[in-house]
Amino acid sequence: QVQLVESGGGSVQAGGSLRLSCRVSGATPTTYSMAWFRQAPGKEREGVACIENYLSTNYADSVKGRFTASADNARKTFYLQMNSLKPDDTAMYYCALILGWDSTCSRAGDIYNNWGQGARVTVSS
Image (cartoon, rainbow, N blue to C red):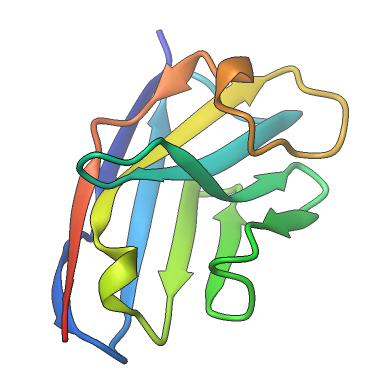
């Protein structure tokens, strides 16, 4: 059974940085799409970044140039480096994975069947 375990959330001031990690167990990702989502209270879930096995990435306009998705295939761990954080970035962040994906990565939540437990990110002004 595939499990995703997230770590790295926390509280920072505006302009600061955080790195989220998402470690995969129960499978070895070879072909996949992996994405990071966030949801703030009262707002819809937003796919902020994705990466696939060829390491191509895609970002939402709201985070482009500030967030970077990466993958360490040997460690079966995915990362989201978040720089220049803003109060609007405050949310619960979730990693998601689908295996056997043979296309460009997707930020659409409905394709993913494996989800992490979430990591809270709070950015104060």
